[in-house]
Image (cartoon, one colour):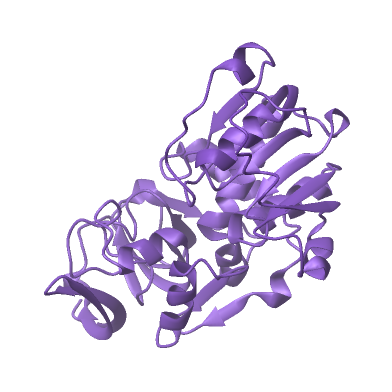
Length: 330
């Protein structure tokens, strides 16, 4: 197939990373059993890092970012999928070192592909995307650890971002009292209330600088996207036998702390790896997002962008000024 299509390409030029919309051919795509015509993608922090030349995300350029894609199978050499199947691809190496979803077409291994649940449209699937899947996986693991609404409030950091806002919606629908942790304690009250947050705290409360190994318990559990001292604070101010999930390092990848929250209060720290999550669990979580956990109350405020207009939203994300979800219509 020699069909031409458009894609966002990032190229390295004298140490700088340039973005441009280019024309490509199917034969330019990497090897894989499944060729997918992309209908929607979404913008994630890893995409912004890839665009800016972060070699921890993408090693070689030129490259097409986009760690999420939803679309229709156009060719398949796998017996798992046939032409016309509606599918989702998120995580694994898509958009990192394998050309990703900011493109009309992707070609990927069959074992990266998830059947799109019949209750989800392409658009809604990408409103969730990796961020929504990560939020849902965090809630799933929190529940599996024994966390219940009766234990007390759960704090969600990055509450106005993709993972945080969706996690709040799911938790509140399950009867949890949710505390939204944001950069400051002012503004966006209406949005947080719509998402289901019961109250809100500023980053000062989740970024303790006292140096104490334990704090007075303030919450029963947490979902954290920040890492570093924020994660440390969440652990040492958690009520005994609570659980804290960790899925990000926007603040820092370091975690300098004592073992006291674990050995004195029985706190569980749960790592969330949405990139390499086993396929059986991945499909189960997507099915929940399509059904009883399809409760995100912020869909009407999702920003829909074309490839041509995506640059401004990438810049906002790199400046840590983005809010909610940006999806890309191909």
